[in-house]
Length: 533
Image (cartoon, rainbow, N blue to C red; front, side, top):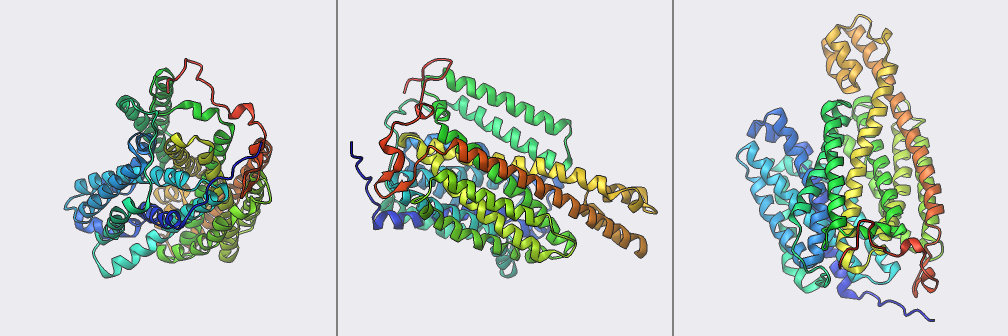
């Protein structure tokens, strides 16, 4: 039986993709744009240390916590409608944040920005699923979407630095307002509307709250463990998040109109791609965290200089993200993803060769790493979103992005803990000889602590401590890179084996479309009872 080729995208769809890339760029930039503004806003608003942490973190927390609810809401009320509502809220909240008169006001407005950002992210991805029906074109569109997200995260500190040189700290928020206005004007003309006709029941508010509490508890607990070590508070938060998550799953299985249809996870392509993306993001975030510390605390670069040295990584990732879809016209996606992961493994292996003055080696290693991970990111995202039925594209996009958020948090926590343990073991008692107890404790905790106390020590003792602590940090960087290398090699094997049945993408449609789908790709009712759709 001949398979009918899916329709090709026209000029309207490609221009609409540019409109979807803009809010993605802004949401990503807002994750990092505030970093350089912290000293100025601290002087103006005088936040406490706890308030300052919430100012920086609450935006990302609210995005992570509301993604699932926002994705499902878009499936119900219309993805374009939710996107435009989120754009309006994002613009208003940006103005309020820019002109905040207190730390409390800035925390609240940053939280609102996070909620608005959570409505934008799955809506943009789900609309791409609806606008681009051809597999190759959809992969290219997702490559553009991912490129905008990568560029936004990298440009955030750089654009923030430029704005801070000319304006006050609130200006970093105002740059998003014209973009959101443009989206509100042109979005209704360029973007299609789509909503699921099957999801007719009211939104399950209880499930929405359970989802928010579960994700926020886990992400916050993992972040606490990464920053302060594994303690009762961090473990307790993760346990609470896991228990609430279990309650969320139980409720979805027993509900006739669930917030998240768990049958989505019965699709092997979706589930395997989701796990792969989570690990992919985790190793990228973990290694990037150590690389940033190396650039500033070992090489001695300023934050802006360190940010500039991350540009080669992003620049190299752009062609990788855009050209990858062409490869799957000739090679099965699983093998392309596995090859990308093996390229990333080479990058991680290069980082294990960095020494105390290895700037060139580090930059080269991170560039190679990022190219390989970008390949995995584009195809994994496309596979996860493309595996879901069109009426569940919003929920699938939200789950995929939540996996990325959790992967980043887990990568920072787990790899950070490994690095900290190696650092503490390598600093050694001999390196701390003659160092006062308080300074020795700070130095043994982290390289940042050592750098902070050396200025108060006699030159001979301080120089020796600094050299030893930097050497210990480089050793921890090597171990973290080695762990990442092993993880991506194992992931490459798993992806190549578990996803090898997914066919090449051709202009006529998926290569595997002419053969029956594997049993694991057929949605089945949950064990606790059927879900009435």
